Amino acid sequence: MTTTNRGGGSWRSAAYLTLIAVVAATAAGLTALLTNIFERKAEQREPYVRLVEVGENDTDPTIWGKNWPAQYDSYKRTAQLTKTRFGGHQGSETLPEEKIVRDPWLKRMFNGYAFSIDYRDRRGHAYMLYDQEQTKRLTKPQSGSCLHCHAALMPLYRELGGGDAMKGFEESFKFSYQDLNAKLHDSGHAHPVSCVDCHDPADMSLRITRPGFIRGIQALAASDAPVPALASIQVWRDGSRRDPYDPNRDASRNEMRSYVCGQCHVEYYCANKMPLTFPWGKGLTADAIEAFWDATIFPNGEAFFDYTHAETGAPVLKAQHPEFELWNQGIHARSGVSCADCHMPYVREGATKISDHWVRSPLLNVNRACQTCHRTSEDELKMRADVIQQRNYELLERGGVAIVALIDAVIDAKAKGVAPETLDAALRLQRRAQWRLDFIAAENSMGFHAPQEAARVLGEAIDYARQGEIVLLRGTTAPRTDAGSGPTTDAVADAGTR
Ligand code: HEC
Ligand code: HEC
Ligand code: HEC
Ligand code: HEC
Ligand code: HEC
Image 1 (cartoon, protein in one colour):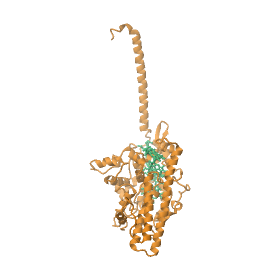
Image 2 (tube, protein in one colour):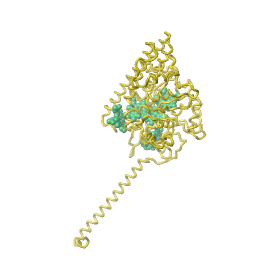
Image 3 (cartoon, protein in one colour):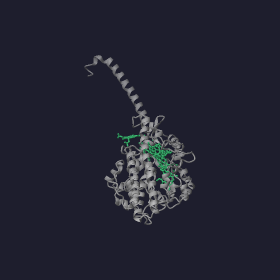
Image 4 (tube, rainbow, N blue to C red):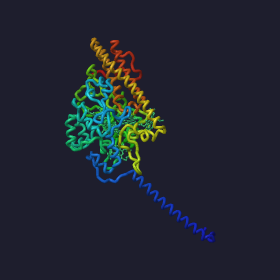
């Protein structure tokens, strides 16, 4: 080629030179661009300069805030008052409104338990320790385990367990709330949920710290309950099972975006007869958890119950905020939508996006919380959520009427000298009805996290309450009709053998 084309050499070499120049310029440009992209990538991966070292005992978020000021600033905003129709809180800044005053049937249902003394709306994370210290429920003896979900307390668990947090956790239920709370304050570590509870200080990755969750999710994995929304559990089940399921080793990053919340937003046992327990050994549905409690025996040999109903004498269960469990039954969980997607959506901060640590109702934030996935107008999305919540609310209130009717019927029947077997059958049905009603009442999304499941559970609650009345009216020991494919009469009978 060089020999045959020699004649056109001069313009050609000019062209080559130009080409080389262009290539060089492009390459330089490209290099600059790539460098820029890499820098931005790096910026997104580690959008901070570590100004201070943080470690396992740094429960004070202000220290972490020096390295991650944007996350810290949004975290601090959980101290602001927020309010939606069913979320955030009503009432004053001093203390949220009493739920048991707004819904008197709740007070009636909890008669005999501390929740009938004081039970308020929840509010932002900044208040969790304060609100716990203020509640009049502490006028009854409460256990040190209460702190598991209301403070950054891993250093305290390590202290109690001589360096072993799991051991410290197992000791904590033996303390009175007041004693352990005083220890927490003496340690100088008393803060509400903090960075160290969800993040590994070494690399800021998400991690689980709470022993209650670790124990609970291990038991769930070891069971054969279906967990379609938690794929890593199935992977673990299909593996060798040599070591127990470990969320910090086995869970996907996306699962961790819900697990960190599942450390606290769950149903639990927390009193002084045994360590704090997350009841997931038979599954995460209301029915599975009920079956778990029904099969639980306290170390003293007594069958499990939370309290004796003061008016009827039924040994009943108390449900606590099962957000993680109900979310698990819904279409969002099944589609891989995590708690953080809706409650901590991304927000732009200069060149980077950060996760909004102002954890609150997504309905205050539909634009970032929902419209990233749903190409529907903000008004329409709010309306859809409201329709779900309104339907749930109506069914819930209907359930409230039904449970009060059953309690009244029991009192009436007792006054008339009802046969013990009939009374016993009615009390078993009260336990079943109350458990379901409370499960959805205590869950804080007003049905949104899994609308159809919430309706199913409430439908059963109403049915069991009315069956209880029928039993008393007819003076029989068994309800006239059973709940179809639902729990059998045998299971009803088992529930009452205490
Ligand atoms: C698809 C979005 C979505 C997902 C995923 C989701 N939530 Fe929610 N959550 C909502 C909506 C909507 C409400 C109702 C808020 C309201 O009534 O103002 C809500 C309510 C709540 C509330 C009460 C909020 C308040 O302001 O009182 C809590 C607590 C909560 N969710 C926790 C969780 C937890 C924990 C998870 C994961 C296990 C989760 N949510 C998953 C959308 C979601
Ligand atoms: C260490 C336990 C703990 C962890 C972890 C935790 N929460 Fe909470 N959360 C609480 C407590 C306790 C409250 C109620 C505080 C109060 O009322 O004083 C609360 C309140 C809330 C509220 C109500 C806020 C409001 O403004 O009314 C929402 C929403 C919420 N949490 C969602 C989440 C989500 C989502 C996660 C995971 C990213 C999470 N929480 C992790 C314990 C926890
Ligand atoms: C497994 C975690 C967990 C444990 C254990 C726990 N809480 Fe909470 N607590 C929460 C969450 C989550 C909320 C916010 C959701 C709600 O209010 O339903 C909350 C809310 C509260 C509130 C504010 C709303 C209300 O109920 O009036 C008080 C007070 C409270 N807890 C006291 C206690 C006491 C006392 C104990 C011990 C008996 C305890 N908590 C144990 C997780 C927990
Ligand atoms: C209740 C759990 C929880 C607490 C407490 C918490 N974070 Fe996070 N944080 C998250 C979640 C969830 C993400 C999203 C991580 C992901 O998707 O991998 C996140 C992400 C981050 C990231 C990565 C960048 C980003 O914004 O997505 C940083 C940095 C961070 N948090 C800093 C903090 C700091 C600082 C604190 C304390 C002031 C804190 N976090 C408290 C749950 C928490
Ligand atoms: C990360 C993506 C994502 C986010 C964020 C998200 N959704 Fe969804 N949503 C989905 C998916 C996926 C489905 C299932 C629909 C399907 O598969 O066609 C769904 C379903 C729904 C449904 C139908 C529910 C049902 O039970 O049939 C409603 C209503 C809804 N979303 C509202 C909301 C609202 C309100 C928010 C914000 C609080 C929100 N979504 C946030 C992805 C998301």
